Image 1 (spheres, rainbow, N blue to C red):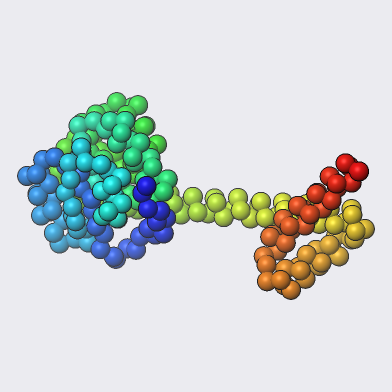
Image 2: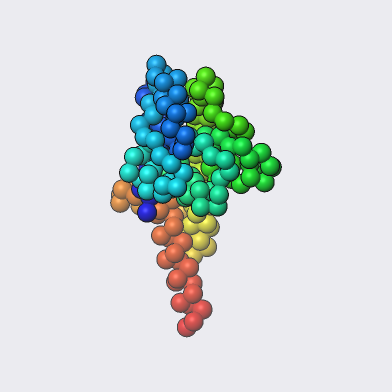
Length: 212
């Protein structure tokens, strides 16, 4: 199983970035290494497309994956999808396959930049820069969306706990909120965790009364 390392989605503008390059053409791969020689990108490994991608990524923990392949097969796309879920990182794919379905499947599998045609060493650096920038922007939006969802869920739990306390303990809304906040402060818990506990307890109590 590939290691989880979602913190790697945070890429600094200045740190050196290691690339896992998947390219069966050794001469072309060497020209890319040379072209990136004076940049922040360092090709730390060369591999052929038949090698297990998940194993390679798990062992090397690259910052970026660059793939030059005639056409991505199902196994590669499934591996990229797994990486995108458990250990997301920018993926740049160069492919001669230019049909819309293949491009869509590749992007859905986590490819940040899909480039039709062979790798041109002179174009690699700006393409990598764009892929890293797009990857960072996407994950920033994703983090903000997850934070918003969490805040909404937290607010729903707190509001529900307040309503149940008001109903069962004959409290005002202010008294119910004050009671939860005091419990949170006294026990060192988050307010939303106190609310979830209250909801669980009071609903169990209500269910017990219904069965009596």
